[in-house]
Amino acid sequence: MRSYRVTEFGAPLSEVDAQTPMPSGTEVVLRVKAAGVCHSDLHIWEGGYDLGHGRRLSLKDRGIALPLTMGHETVGEVLALGPEATGVAPGEVRLVYPWIGCGKCAVCLADNENYCATPRSIGVYCDGGYADHIVVPHPKYLVDLKGLDPVTAAPYACSGVTTYSALKKLSDLIGREPIVIIGAGGLGLMAIGLLKAMDGVGAIVVDIDARKREAALAAGALAAVDGAAPDAVAQLARAAGQPIRGVIDLVGSAQTAALGFDCLAKGGKLVIVGLFGGAAPWALPLIPIRAVTIQGSYVGNLIETRELIDLVRRKSVPPIPVTRLPFDQANAALNALRDGKLVGRAVLTP
Image (cartoon, rainbow, N blue to C red):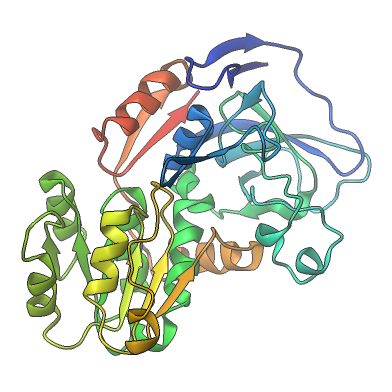
């Protein structure tokens, strides 16, 4: 088995050859057909998050041990099953749900493994899809794609379910008024298509990159605003044509959080997804004065992932733009993502 592993934070990935794993118990081994390259991979690669005020969250201190094979957006073909694994068969192509918990605590038993305090997320705490084979601990984490293209479907394991779960947190607004989406990268473009499939009024998209704003408009955004413009809040108000009550921040920087907060009407909700980094920019008294809700949203659960795949199939949701690269270009893909050169998603393929 060949894999591309983080052996030192901030250093290029190392190509490693090892014996192809054999499954035991309920494990399933899949031959990887596609592995998305996510912005979260950059944080893992770099070893932490910027918390603002000179503080940094160390992933090593959070239990992420090296060496590690990243890749949490994976589609593979079932190759072999452990003696206790049932429900899938060799040759089937499945999307891997990566946000796995301990399986025993209250949140795991409530099907919210993504909130588990002792996570075992594939590609984060356990080896993931930047390899030609991957081990999944149980067949229940394998979602049937039923004919969807493995390469364009791979991002549904993270950018898809992440935006779907965030949109559901604004479900009372979706069919009645436009939603502001900050960030037109892979998640933002995914959000536009899913919002339409969920019978939403539409998205007003914010990005500082003109190419990404153009991509958002091409994907069906109602409008696209330069977040760096001095009158960005006024532009958003004009584009909405009514008070803005729902914003999803897919970037998660101090600047985008400030913009999202500032454009909200009284009683509005800001859902923060992005992990770019920084500290909260809001004046605390304004939160109660304006009765604003600020809610975090972390990926999505397995039930939401199955709902998402069903929605994509039923509503023929168009895939986001994908740049296909061979596995040996994993370092180049990460560098291109870090430098803002990608539109949509890079997906590694055999």
